[in-house]
Image 1 (cartoon, rainbow, N blue to C red):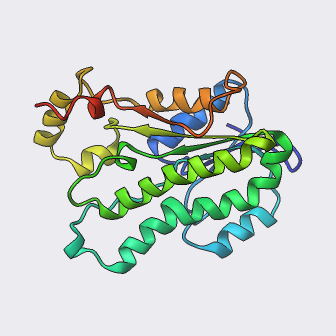
Image 2: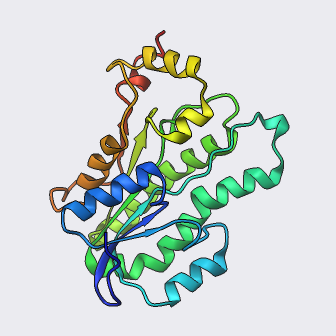
Length: 230
């Protein structure tokens, strides 16, 4: 992956230090695209000043924006502070909107692409995931609204919603017994891989896609259509 110089167009991957974000960045890079990856150290999405600073500095033109940054702190609502809810929303939703506002002139000029990594919890729910579920539902609505507003400018906006992907975070938030139960509930019989998500994200932002916009593409091995079998 390379960071393009000022004036060169690039794919900006927010949250590109995580396993799914890194896989997406690598997929674009393998296709010869210039990729800029940011994590909290480079652009803290909870800090509007940090976002403004990043965009005011030396940077490439953003022709594709991939939002893969996310915060998920499993707790029941009664145990959550309002600050924890607000922080999740800041990273997952508000920071993305602030970045999009900055990048929009570039995206319009390039007739670019926006890809948001949401989740099956953008249309489902789970105990102990209120901030995450709330924020992912919001992202799917944002994708639909932006798709309508930006279509006349040639900018396509879509979401990818992973199910249970085999990452360190998935295994940290679910014990072995829960992982086994989830695998039994997935029709294809296994957790997904980060590359499975990356391939869909790449297609949506590639020249092969000229007509898909406002959609939420689910990558979950059939989990969400099978009624949660066990």
